[in-house]
Image 1 (cartoon, chains in turn orange, red):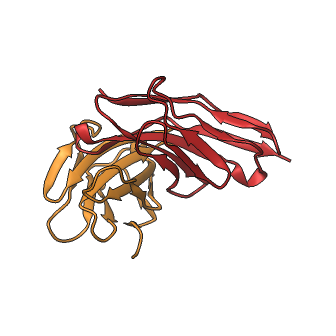
Image 2 (cartoon, chains in turn green, blue):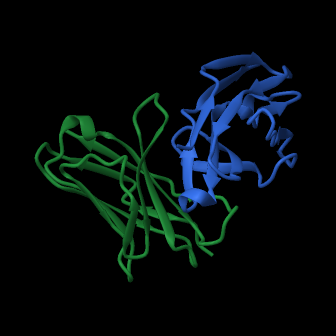
Length: 114
Length: 113
């Protein structure tokens, strides 16, 4: 059973471009979480999704950011018109629908905006 | 709402010293509690967990006990090694909030020889 797969591992975008970050959860996991980590800072929750539904997006900026987890395929975190402040590591985690189980993390995507 | 508060870092210890990283939580229901570890350039890995009051999670010499009366889940290790240098995150998952995960801000540990 492969772990949580994120790609790309590293992404460089110029200001104003779009960034698409992909996350394939572990097999059987229907819950996906996205977090942002700035250098020397902790994890900031962004969004929590279940298949085809956004459960909690309270941590995601209202503008330029969007997330989806379609019935088929990976979860996508999309950042439009990127700015330098979007440079960070973005981590995805997944968990099964049962309670009391841990979330499993991917290796992250390191976004650099130049 | 639910939240996790953990000890501010960074923490620097000599090899073989005793480690405690404090973690307290606020939750509306009966959460499960976790400690995660992040090594440089990597994602978070589960270190240990406890799913109900008085449970003790343990792994690789680390321990933490779920204390409902003090709403705490402090991480301890009797003798740290240089290889334990990493960032440690306390977290909770609460079924009352649909299994949302809440993380502390992380505590950076450096162990010097």
